[in-house]
Image (cartoon, rainbow over all chains, first blue to last red; front, top):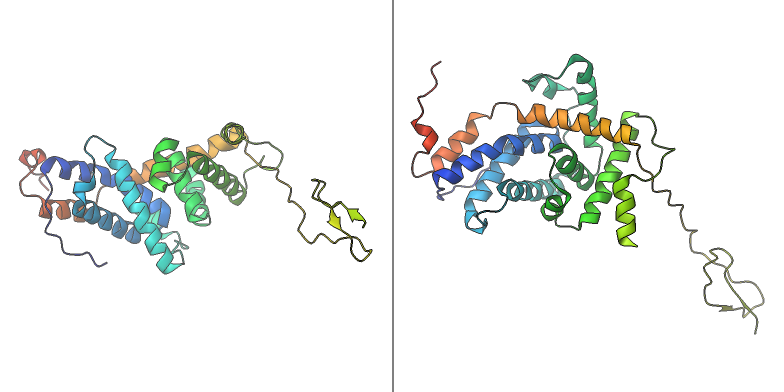
Amino acid sequence: MTAPAHSATVEPAMRDALLAAVPNLRAFAISLTNNVDRADDLVQDTLLRAIAHIDRFERGTNLNAWLFTILRNLFHSEYRKRRREVEDPDGSYAAHLVSAPEQGAKLDLADLRTALTKLPPDQREALLLVGAAGLPYEDVAKIMDCAVGTVKSRVNRARVRLAQLLGLDGVEDIGPDRLTRAAIRSAA
Amino acid sequence: MATRTSRTTGFGRAPIPDFFGAGPVDLRPARPADPRPGLGPDVRDRIGQELRAMYTALAGEPVPERFAALLRRLGPAESANADAPKERR
């Protein structure tokens, strides 16, 4: 990776806040890329960019959301350049996991990580931010620079696609979920 | 002049003049069915649990030293945490 030289400095409190955000940033980046080295480069670039533009961060607002926005933008820039996802076909990343999940769920998690790479980036991001990171739809809409209804639609499509990829039952014979129905009603 | 209304969509398009006696041909593709598939609560819950389990495992990993070193380099002064005794190995 080529990190630009920075002469910027950050206050100790902000530095601690940035460091505290790293675990979530890494989790998001690894989930997005399914490649731990690439994810760590993304996180490092995110921190460097955040520090370089720290004056643009509004104190009192959600630092994690701001950092997620930067990481997401960097991921998209890189994605446009690469146009090809680097996956983890041999499951080598699973060996990196320190907190190993239960034996019965391990295969599911490996399948889930692989299936996530099959989703379009926009759907993957929305699903990870809402379903995995637990961010509110409104925050995700700001991060993704789109309408709340768009986020809901992407999350719903991502869930359906994931269910298909993972072979979960009950996809075909059921109607729209509560959020989709609400989005349809509000759009009408 | 005879006019006909499209029969393919049933949306009452404006009448199209039938200049040559043959019926107008509507080349537009038929509107695709929009079943708006969704998932049952069990499947949604299962996916949510799997995602959270994955994310929690990832977020629980130790932070690589490179990030702490990077932020230390950029800080003018030590943070409050720096006063804590260093971990002995």
